[in-house]
Amino acid sequence: MKILFTGGGSGGHFYPIIAVAEQIEKIASTDKLLPPSFYFMAPEASDERMLYDHNIEFLEVPAGKLRLYFSPMNILDIFKMIAGCIRAFFKMFSIYPDVVFGKGGFGSFPALLSARILKIPIVIHESDSVPGRVNKWAGKFADRIAVSYPEAAAYFPKERVAWTGQPVRSGIRPRQREEADRFLKLEPNVPVMLVIGGSLGAEKLNDVVVNSIGELLSNWQIIHQTGRANLKDVTDRANVTVEDKTFLSRYHPFDFMTDSALAMASGAASLVVSRAGSSIFEIASWGVPSIIIPISESNGNHQRANAYRYAQNGAAIVIEEMNLAPHIFITEVEHIRGNENLRKSMSEAAKAFHRADAGEKIARALVNICINHGGK
Image 1 (cartoon, helix red, strand yellow):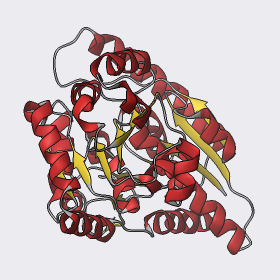
Image 2 (cartoon, rainbow, N blue to C red):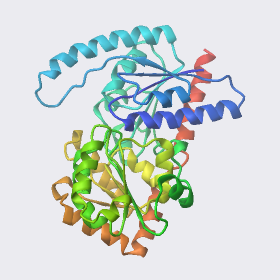
Image 3 (cartoon, rainbow, N blue to C red):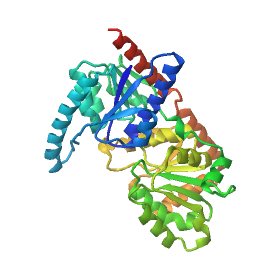
């Protein structure tokens, strides 16, 4: 049973693949199938440790990004994409997997095109409420299509699409608050705000947190994922901004949070502040109230659509980037902190949004295709 995963561009394309791989391993063990062989074809490994832990072989294939605006990089990326497609074809031919699972993003194009040419079964998954360009294209010939938002199903042939929800990896399930307090050295009776800017961090989120931190730390402890390139700058600015240094111990910046750290932080969090990518589904799985700040420049306004769709049932409050001033941010944060009934209703709405069996459903579809493909 050989399964090739592909997806590229961000952690939002990568981490759901890990969640699906976990479920495939469980199914293979429960159904007494031969251990699966996993491959991940993309421009970069995203998280080498994760790949190693799940015995996923990384196959590096370049991919160019086609921008919707003029850029000299478009010319270079055309040649990069051609080279990537050629390399992907020969790698795919040598492995000849039973099925290819695509998560979208420009990095998945070479693998999906190669699978199409070689007539290898294809399953794709779309995480956004409005599908990206690669998945819209692949949806025309994919054997199965899974979507995280029911609205996205309208963009694909109805006989081949299913609303599964978003796979969330088991490693970030929330831990007990007491365990998180010990691990992160938190004060037990002070509420915790978790700020996650996606796998690469988010400068505008960092800015509003740093500019608000002087007022927030009197009522909050803040766990802040800054992004690897931003940690020193954010930490230095926070040290200057906070006038009452006795509260600085309540600020916990991290460049990147491992699954264990996220599991601890989510178990302690009373509020999550995040972008509107795949992290929405992680927040929903935690059942924690959130403030969602979509990227204004995201392709096709995908993040904005995601944010308002998630907030529609009361799980989150949305602040647009144009309104992301410290006084507005602090007002919304304190409004949530001071209203227990609101926090409870937001938590319940988040839990209702989460579909816990998403990874299992997709994994089962992939295993069934593998079994049928292997018998041909």
